[in-house]
Image (cartoon, rainbow, N blue to C red; front, side, top):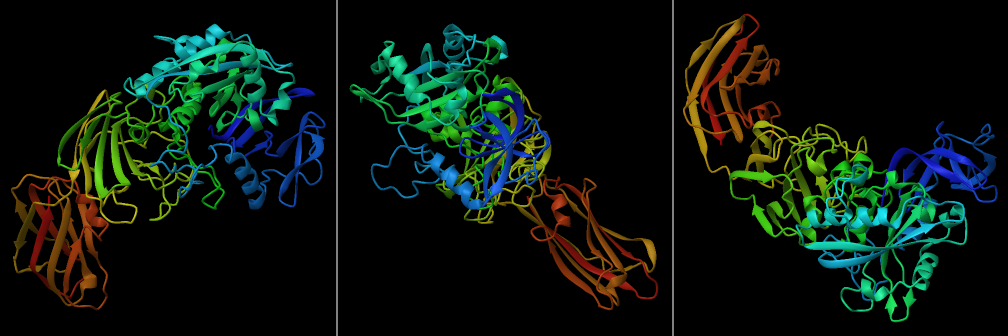
Length: 617
């Protein structure tokens, strides 16, 4: 699938010039606006895009084409009603999967596939797979792209034409570490019987395949298993990509019979007007569904009930919006989560044992996993520095994914029962991808971090979806590059130091300098958790300001002139519940820890009896 978020694209009109429209949606459901924000629909009777009216929650054509003044009743940013959108979505989504042959629970899950995270259907993700690619042209739309041009883009060695990073074959070989060798036989172009606009509402696949078979194509050569099923079919049509109806790039199921061969999955996209339009991104994305049964890692804006989209993994995965990177010429890699689901990662590095780890960029055959004790929920880590296929992603550094094969990337809410299947823990603690504020930004990945980058107490946190501590801690990340090293493992808190000071000294009254008392710790380590206990005698604790300073100069205010009229301050402060103390997590343990107490009002006097530190490191 290929999701579009407010991009301005060019559309064909049968009886008028091409028009520029803003698009929101995917092949299951989409809406269109002119550049002034008015909702429009294509009117087949007029052969033109016309302003939309909203009748009983459904778009209808006003009959006034968009070159004219908007009619009475037209509005900017119209949206169809929930029931109408649901109906249209379900009708098109039903084409995506083959008919169920036996009962399986959750058959209709969308971004979550029932096959342990994958979508249902015949998978051909390993071995030598030969696909059929049919080039298609219309009565009114031709292309100067040749079969040789497409053959090079799909099958070429050391292919870099038109700025593409590699050929489609090379892309899948790289992602699979050589496990999948996907080649294509390119035929055509075949010329269909109607004009382009007809095929926005009428699927071209059968007509195009009939012409290819009539022209001598033997479908048996595309059956790697010898079971009478065509492994893969692709249809590339002439002209620019039409993000409309049946011409929207997609991967669906179709059941056609040709002698003793039958079809199964196919993908459809465009080949452009000329060789300069050729790019591998969308072809690889749709082929990822067709061959590997990968789900889309973005929100269709339907199942979760809010009808608002989220970006999922945005530009960071081929199966989200990453197929569009560099205009499709340098698509994002397939994220570690999906590569692992299809068995492409032979080397497994488990991060549960505390230690130093190294992740090499482009090592697509390795998966670095932190296991949580739940078979369906875990964390993955990989190097996504801005080189090679990652040259066009928005951020650079260490990526950490929170994965749950029982989730769905339509569930952006992040609740224990409804949450992402694979979500990127954005290093800045934002939820920009979940809220669709962006497809990614420069702060999403972890760059160089001294001390703790991720734990139960950081933002983002490494907690499980039920809110409990997973135990994962990542720290001391080196700068992005071909190799990134970091410390990781389970935060078991094996080491705890406890120190106490009992000075029993008076606190200077009405004195901004106050009293300072030091606890010195000689042990090496990084702070993981911290408790501070204070015992102060005072006749009015609202006069007091109490601060803790770390050896590195970090400061936390424990008490700041609250508790008017109350006597004595005897309290324990814990980094689990005190936001102020989280500033010390990841800081060096060794050195002088200083408690500063200031009595900022005259007359009432007090004394520091004792205070203590308990630090897990």
